[in-house]
Image 1: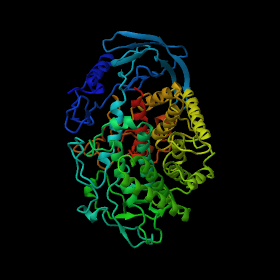
Image 2: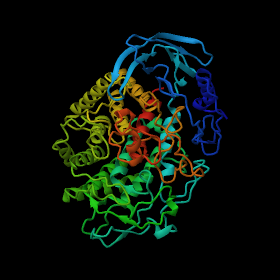
Image 3: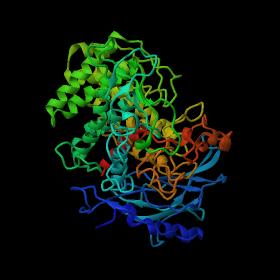
Image 4: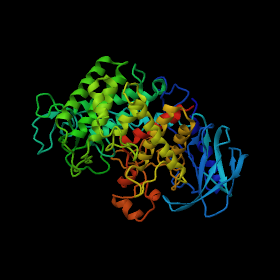
Length: 615
């Protein structure tokens, strides 16, 4: 069995850092499971569970992508220095040999961090290997690889994140080593779990629904249609942008080896749940979708889903949830058509029923105040969801009524890329699919150009940032800033798919550097990736920080990232007055900066699969 490149060099990486900064290297246990060609470890390349990492990583002013760079891609680093003059730099291989050298570019004060910065560009070096370091003015970076497959494993882990998040099924430790657990919220769990869930008091319905399955949304046991919609859509979009690559990408899930590509098998787990949230025929709001299913009250940390004793509740249907269901089911109908025609037909019927119900009830808004036992996910503007749902239905069916709904929407000619898209702002999802998935929309050329224009603006933003991120909000960093950065990169990646221009490909790769360590905190925000990586994300069952018997989040889990609002008590006490990039702490209690969620990992999955495909 051959270790993946990232792990081949991990001990060597730490040894290199130790030699440079005079700290001892740390031996790391590695746990393997298979990913290719079936599940037990028969493949040449293997996936692995979250490895132990040293508690203290030496800091360095030289900030790099701690995972690695593609040999033929952009390679930049950011250096913290007060010097107004260029600084000498050397790129060294794992034997300490200097393979490239030059001088840095002084960039001055970076507003997002309050740091004086320089940028080093070593893109001209095209060599390959492991455990390179970049030394600037005598100070060394953490080690990194130059490898054409640098992002292959990351793309697999970002997508395999979803299997341990599943509700209603026991997680098999043989498939997800270290993450096995009993099924949560099934008939034999407290209160019959999600098998017979009543409506929340005051909602006016008198039925129960079986809403088993789906993914737990974040660090809690709630399941939300609005967040599930964008999450499963981005997974399906990662398939649609490159079906052959998706078919070849094996994930850690029980359906591996079936006729359906693994990413779609995982998407189906969520789609099945979303359809169960639809109000049954014969009821006053038939066809609408319940906004969410949550506990009646918040549970503490840690809480195993199988041990959750809270009564589950269906929250009132909402127009936003119903349109999320319509959009996701319509997209699902076309991606599953080659693999399961009956399932495709079922999804299309669900989608059309939901869209008609939303048109009949266009102003059933979910309130921001409904946050007991789960997140509110309130939304009082659903024009974007109407646009997204109409777009997906038009692409799937080609029907004129849906085309008219698209072109008559105020979203159709608005700048949907003026701000990052997310669960509350979904028009960009429709725009991206209209641009890339075959359809006969009359003004499709204009639609495609709008994506390219949006990408150009993000590239311009990147050029103005010392750390190269496509993100510069005027009022500080938002909740889930990392996901917003990644969604902006998805727009840039789509522009590459539309034009083939290298500047867009390079923009995605360079922007990903920020997520993987080239940032003001020298922090990789993806668990298990990089020498200094987030590992204590807010979660009720990945709670190793609170209980050593429990695991950290699995490899490939994205942390929410810097958040200037600091809504939780732990972060607000520790980080008051922080510059935007510095408003983050890797603490399980910091839910406003360090939570994990299915939609944030979906943005990582899209971008990492894009990056992996560039080889």
